[in-house]
Picture 1: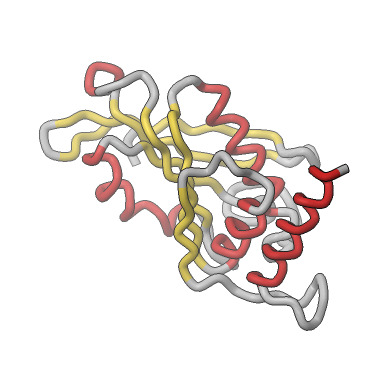
Picture 2 (picture 1 turned 90 degrees about the vertical axis):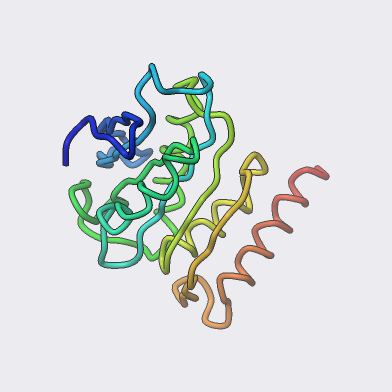
Length: 175
């Protein structure tokens, strides 16, 4: 789509980025925000959309029209091994949470984002839950149909994993 566009009378822009994750893979990303003249503040809240298994950031495009008019910026990206990002495979959330850390760090470094919320679907929802266990700065999470995976422990659901990660975090703080 176009790099600049209108929703109603307001002008918005899409900026595309290639961010390198901690495994050296490039993640293809898109950041939607008001044009500078349309911004009500330097820093605006941002929702990061996390796509599902066998999908890409393109599944999130209908949500741009919902969030931008409310002065909420929108960031979407292809997990490594998906869409146009580098990588041969996915891990159904385990490595994807590191991709998300790369994105969150980038957004914080821009000086254009106040608070961050996550909106994940399927694999993206599970990734959001796993990531949130280690990042207390998140404003909120929408976890749409998180999937439970068996690559960690056969009996563990995403909820169990989040609880385990939270307890590990608490133990580390006590030391």
